[in-house]
Image 1: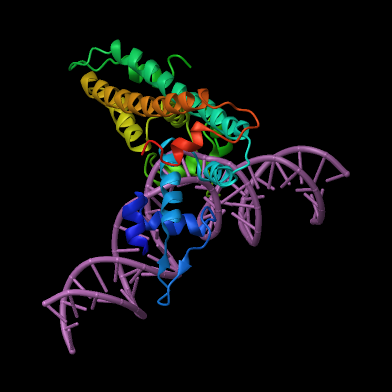
Image 2 (image 1 turned 90 degrees about the horizontal axis):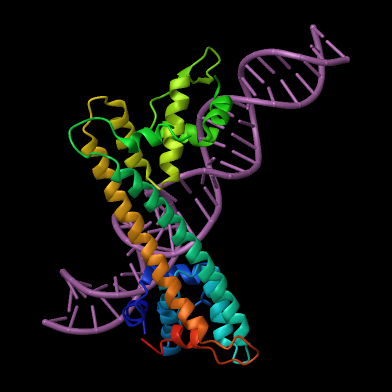
Length: 131
Length: 131
DNA sequence: GTGCACGTTGCCATCGGGGCAGGGTCAAGT
DNA sequence: ACTTGACCCTGCCCCGATGGCAACGTGCAC
């Protein structure tokens, strides 16, 4: 299977497959006589694993750790759980930071007339009223 | 006031002040005879505005629009409110996306023993059990 | 044999910064 | 006067994960 077919089969773009190989997340793919990268079903399976991990917001280094544990049939599930829980905490912290910004701004916007008049509590706050 | 003093007074790093000038968010600062950038209190005030807008997650282009409205004493508050509400929607969408990832992963982790045994629903899910 | 689809590598851009190198400037202390 | 240290200047490289483009090689179908 060439890279394009592997990309279609896994949902990971050819560009990203090369990138993952370049940064060491994937071992160098085998090459056919014409120097084209060749992928097996197992490698496509790994690419799908990576895609799903990315969709849960895992960074590439964390995914590397997860893939290593996945390959290690004797892993302790505690190790996986620890990575996952640390990531959940990170995600929740980021989500809360964004939600806090949204609440603050929503509150400011609620007090803004939103008409043709120029006075606006949003600008007043940004200008340092509450500094 | 030189750039270092302006940075301390505004809370924006000297590096970022130069960056904002370079990308056009700030007009080129005046220069003293030795080519040092010179800042007035008004410019420091603008920098504080930018810093607070950044802390609410506004992108640089949006901040450029907000600064322009701030300067325009005849602005309609509706314009400011529209930018703010669009940004609130963006923030909430991103926060919700992260929160959804966190919930999904938290759910998977809750079903993981987290002990020395190797079986782990987190890895099973990533491997495509639910693909 | 020709054209198209696909592969290869390499470079540039994103965004909001951090950091460092190499050099100029200035003020205070010796 | 001379040195030292703090500050300033510009320009470059780095981060993460991804997209895009250029220039060029390959393979297959007609």
